[in-house]
Length: 505
Ligand code: NAD
Image (cartoon, rainbow, N blue to C red; front, side, top):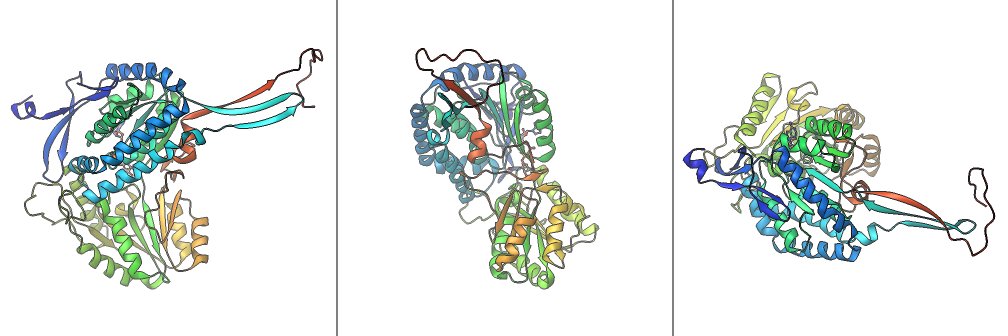
């Protein structure tokens, strides 16, 4: 370790109800993307540290699962108040490590908070069913119980919201939760752990193990982990799903995306351009629901591209903490170069770069990981810029003749996370949402992220596993149900043994 590393803040883990130092000598660099400088290092947990965290979580689980619904919802309500009170602080932590602008970071905290609010209603959500007198003196009822210790593995792009899709519901259902956040921006999770403790959550019910693949594999293989929720890129989602399923766990693994926004000739073009631009370039395109492909139908293409280019060129790119900034830097220098490479190669493949963000320099932040918005026109489905999830501020424009061709294009894509249609026709909208093989659809809404009381998840390569995240699917994922058939015979009402399969009379 050199002198500079010596002075760096070190982020450890949160286990057994407190912050603990890492025991390995392995670390990841945490940058401030706006300056391009490393601001901390994060400990990478080894298998033994993960084992210990799961063990502690398991001990905590026994008591937490036996606590009353009122006790659990009281902690949830207290947590809700604390997250709300610290929303701006959390947004600042997110902005400093992720790079997104403060208003956007605050937005993700608020969307995460909605899941906490949903989970506050857990007594209602866990109500079972009861059938009286299914047979003579026989009643049947069902109810749900928690699974045990469950793990969450999350991506860099929503360090508060994505983990909050998981842990409030898992914990409200009576599980203990172990979070492995992204190694790029781990600090928000450590602060959230403190807020859970302050809310009165017993120690060990919420833990954070920081790390890389070693920590992930240790969770996937651990016999004490009952279920895994994963959100990240498609190759890792597929891997996590296969490995954890093979280890006998329940798994939901949400993957990457290529989200299309279709613009019909009858759309309000001014409205579509404003919203499309925000959906493509907000958060520097680093949202799983970002629109990365605009599909122009019929004669709308020329005007659409001109207006989009004009709109995108006006976006104020700068540090996330500057209130004037509308778009921040991307997560790493490596990401910046990868994104720039896609723009360069798109021209080689025959597309037209209508707006080129590669040359952007932010004065005073020359070493920051900034890249401006790019609009790439005349893109065809075979091109790399369309095929790959770029996860940056690059919008491809494709042209098709009619709405059915647009639906076909979307359905030929391996991803099926989100899609949107801009139109003024109800008939076209209905045909579109019924026809696309996509999990989340917006009609004149470019980023159709479902509310907490619905479930979030795509189709095809955007989700591996049966259950989506949060909403009723979330409650179902973190619990399993029992059906009890009971008979309370009246004294001396014995009718004698019968040896046939029980039927109802
Ligand atoms: P990522 O897949 O690189 O990382 C996600 C998590 O997996 C991190 O915690 C990381 O440490 C871990 N990980 C990375 N490589 C691993 C490996 N080889 N083995 C085991 N674990 C590994 O994703 P990212 O770059 O952090 O996030 C961006 C991606 O996440 C994009 O593809 C985006 O579309 C996707 N995403 C999807 C959704 C959704 O809801 N579908 C939401 C947010 C982000």
